[in-house]
Image 1 (tube, helix red, strand yellow):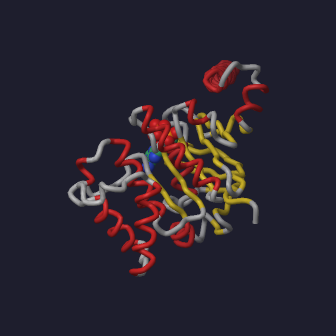
Image 2: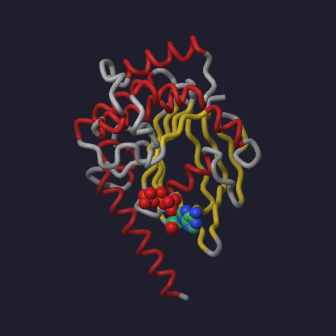
Amino acid sequence: MNVAIECQQLTKRFGERTAVNQLTLTVPKGSIYGFLGPNGSGKSTTIRMLCGLMTPTTGSGTVLGYDVMTQSEEIKQRIGYMSQKFSLYEDLTVEENLDFYAGVYQLGAAERKQRKAELIEMAGLTGREKQLAGSLSGGWKQRLALSCALLHKPELLILDEPTAGVDPVSRRIFWDVIHELAKQGITVLVTTHYMDEAQTCDWIGFIFFGNLLAEGTPGELIERMEANNLEDVFIELVRREEARQAAEGGAR
Ligand SMILES: Nc1ncnc2c1ncn2[C@@H]1O[C@H](COP(=O)(O)OP(=O)(O)OP(=O)(O)O)[C@@H](O)[C@H]1O
């Protein structure tokens, strides 16, 4: 299986509102897929469906080969997920937070010790093991949260705006870690509003009003839209879609 995520016509409705509309996408194994779109366009709702946290209204899909409609528990056990407001225990130390999540993932003593050591090193947290999570700066907290999400060696990492509000240096360090994980074969689906981050993804999907408007490599999208950079692509896609919707509304 060379595909980590595939979904066909995935739709989520909240009452009258369609948050995600017939979304069809494929995320190849080992790739970094950047999921972009303005606020409220349906990114988090898509992610929640793919993580097994929310059942789609209609459509179909698999995550690591498991059905998003019926196998949410299998999916949850095999993925690493870091939400926008990742939850660390601020009154616990770095090590205690890792211990807590190792317990959640039911790691045995030997594996727990080994994974903790590996992840503390990967996240650059060496020397901070006894520091309270609440006293860490934003960038360190975020890397600790990432480490917690990786304890059980997930094959797929789903990150919802992991770098929101983090300074540029910490963002760069975080993305170096993401690229390193991808090199090790871990698939990453990530949402971001930062175009410098999106530029380094292997694939990009652009969603607006719940619809996937464009998909491709950053270079392909820039070329296809005859744009100078991804920010221009983003703005042009929004402009075209708004114009299309206005025309449709006017025609009614
Ligand atoms: N539980 C819910 N009940 C009702 N409406 C919801 C619910 N969750 C999301 N929505 C609506 O669905 C739409 C898509 O929201 P979603 O959070 O998926 O967007 P997003 O692209 O992740 O936005 P942001 O970039 O701000 O995080 C929005 O209009 C939102 O108000």
